[in-house]
Image 1 (cartoon, one colour):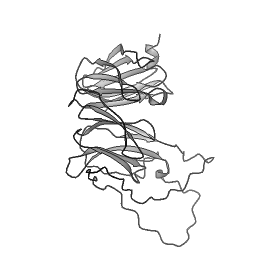
Image 2: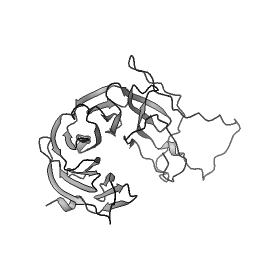
Image 3: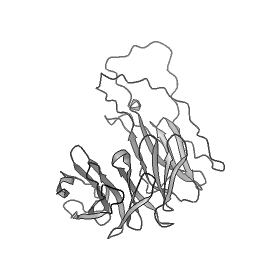
Image 4: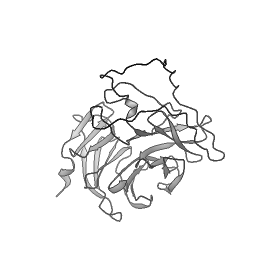
Length: 297
């Protein structure tokens, strides 16, 4: 993790090796040039050791070594001194595993300073996808086909649902709408699911080709959902305004060799510009201007 000047990198180490992407949530944005807000002094917290469920071993400790204390001599701060990047509060979800690889789950990291909590489960396989809903809740999609909602303050399970068939991994997830109440999950069996905030399945649709890599909600009031995969195609759906609405196919965009010549890997929607950004294994990034406007009548 870098600051906005791409300096002062911070790391959190994990034993996990897999397909799951980390998820980051900026909890309070303080700009370096915003003199109207006083940036609070960051105190280095002591290492946090969350309480464990009975029978669940703790994962390997991955806390950074605290810096040695500075001399007590007084030192005047220069007017050109910049605040540290760690003063921008954020939460991050990092996949991890125990030493014996018998429990797998997610570490909740606060500013990469220490581990706030963790959610490790047995017999669910490794986490394949994760998504922060807000600073209090997050989702994890497991290899077992389950989607589980956890609390960021502890390892408490808030909701759980067997979304895909047992043993069919949940490969990707996204959330949008009011209070992130619209949840979209995609499985390795090429099925796209629409879930409510209690993880009830409201609708599902089967994709044409295999290899689902990412799903993204265009959260500008249109409820448009896009999927990206191995076939170099962007599939566009209308998820509907209500939970009871079924998926509606809108378009299939074939990214030929002039746009993306390899697997589509990730997408993000810029709400202010109504632009979809897609990335591919070929190293290219493409921007689709007024993306949702093309599908609104």
